[in-house]
Image 1 (cartoon, one colour):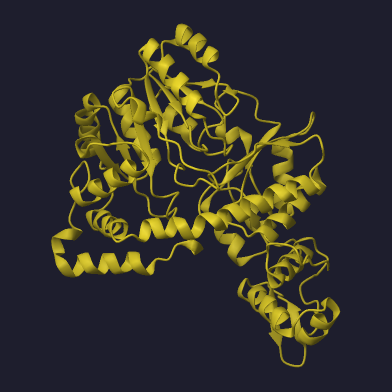
Image 2 (image 1 turned 45 degrees about the vertical axis):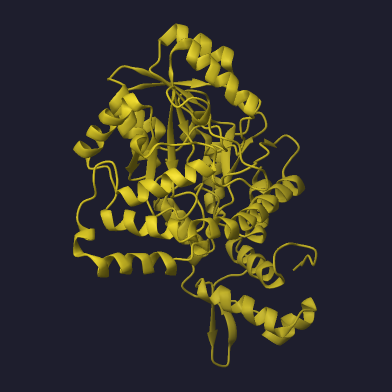
Length: 465
């Protein structure tokens, strides 16, 4: 076992992940004995408390057990290939919430879902807000207004104002997540058969959403950290699209951010073509060590619809998103929201409003962003150390992911199957591309794993390549 004193990961975490790797790889089988706390501490030249803490975390995961007169053993309930049977039962189509839960309780390490870590969300203050509104008025557990409760709309307007977007409360609509926000927006602006230009790689389930709406998604190439505007112009002439969907702040795959100049050029072209920009800003709050840039919508509120979310900045299960709309779209979107029941429960909106108003939202971001930055740095360092020189990846500035391009004749779908057997989950590129070949691309996300777990996962993935 090789420990790195200079690593950003605690020594006990390094011990946890390296024993975890040995179990996943079959080097430690069910029933195998591990050294006593004292002997392993002596061997590694660390304190007995460090080893005791590592063994305790592995027991909590269900990987180790302690028996009288036998000491510490690999848990017997674990199969010879930890988690493989479980993973095989999951849909091969893409990452599911199960991956992340399995990462907490088995040998699996998931880099599949681009979300924040629920373990970093201090829920006590949020639960206290729910309790406060419960005690205040039972009608707070009734249905919310179609556009959202005024208290939350006020707080969203304040958040956007701090980001440089002076959003009128009259133009805001609360939705049950950012994908639902896109759904009601598509219903309001497009009809079956219409075309939407899509910056790729995009978000998961977008392809399925467009298909459900019977809309045609036409991909637009990346150029630098923005989009290829010449390609946009060409696609406009060919397809006469209803909208251009862009993710200027980190996206859901690449972690790249459009520069101010790229934002201005994108808006200028949209104005020239008379096309609506849909600004997917779900991950915009997760900037990792960089100063913020004003949204595209702040440059022109009449030509841009803004899609935001609390699920990425706070907790993935929260399921609250919002739209900041051009005035002409507010009534159609409000009508669609009311008809589809797309808003979140009133008590949840009120609790979130109180949470934000009390300063807990800003405090949460201040606390977690350095943690995500350390995880991003750990992933990048591991990629540099272990990946073949034929593999390239994007320099993530925010969000939770980086986008990998593999070498020639390497199939990400074949790698996906092999990685699952090693207890590693990632997201194949096919999930985020509408038409382009996905075989040589994939997404790795770092939001759910500590740096040492990422190191072990990347090391295993690189060995397969």
